[in-house]
Length: 540
Image 1: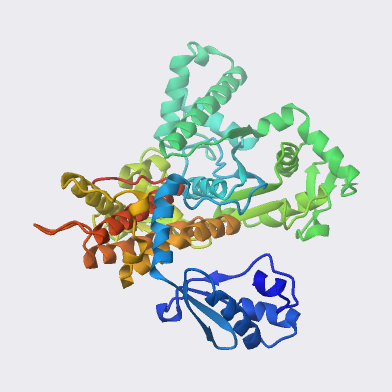
Image 2: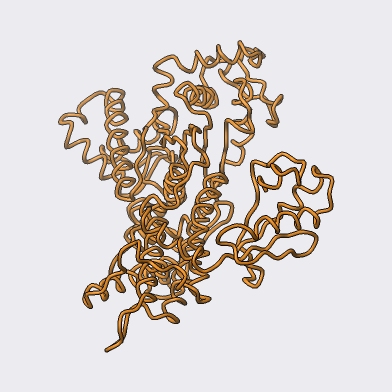
């Protein structure tokens, strides 16, 4: 295309982005593009005429075996086997770096996820966000973005008081308040406090409550951190809501928003005019009695993220937080930011778990919810992370405990991990036979010419694009679905191509070329599983 423009054959500007895809029907070539249709109007030419010009140029390109024009001007491009096969060596030599790109280089993102109240163990909705959020952070970093992961601790307000009163009641042998928290974990924490703070039960009730509040919060946060780390999730920042109030950040945020012209006073209260930016009603920042609202803390928290260098603040919230989308975006707009660019609010749907065909609802330890530790106990970290991250967060998902703990091709995580172990098995067998893939300069890519090898190479070439798209759309499930497709192609390759000589057969260059392809596929599968925080086992 650039050559055609430089030669004066096309009077257009070379576009920054050109769509090139792998056709689903392989009879349509290795790659297809609609660039001729894209250039036709600015060039003042029929799409078919533009396609003829570009096809002629492409046919002169080294490595291109054939270019066909289809329909109104689609270009179907077929590469020769040697050019296609070279990708196997490229992948192996790149190793863990293969797939990484700079699609989002220079973008600074604050990614907040989970952020459950520190009044109990992480429930299954939070577990989904832990899996998705951590995978998304890995994907975004693989696309060049500068990402800070953050957990917002709602450690101020009435829920923390209810939590403290529940601990206090249990420690004193009294019933938990009607609106309090129940479950074995409350008794465990209450006992830890009475053991760790001798004489706490002899203190006056108010002082006692302060101890249970402070110590209970410390112990619960420590428990949440433990669960997250064991789930393979690390947060760069644990941000305290209470710190916003203690530091005066809430009052400063209100002053800043007033300077922007969006704060007003009415009926003795202080309001933010969020209806100017799509919210269904204006929001109170400070009530008439002087009490600060949660919304005021939300505003201060958003401004804190921006002050700390976040260009894009991504909030990942639970299914019961739909009402927060417009009000959070309105905060950004009131602060003078672009509500369509500087802030993203994503809502995750519910998760159900089945055992023996029946929904599992309760946890003995938490009383009425399934916790992160329950999920890990039932299906393990790998299965949990994979199954929770493999579907779009827009959809409710059901996890069948019996299925995801089975060694069955119907179990997606087993299907993908088993493909990796098969590849490792090939490498072990080759080592036993004293066979290796040979030096890079002796690799003969043109020998990778069968349908199954071509399919495999095409899939490997798609990996960087899959990562870039997953990062741009904030959809890490695209990586999981890609891995399942890749595993399927490998299983078919395994059944139809011999990687190693049998019996007295001689080792050939074809065997060596296929060993390069197997190692390339193993590399991509391992890289993809790493992005999901899932292990790539060598044996199962």
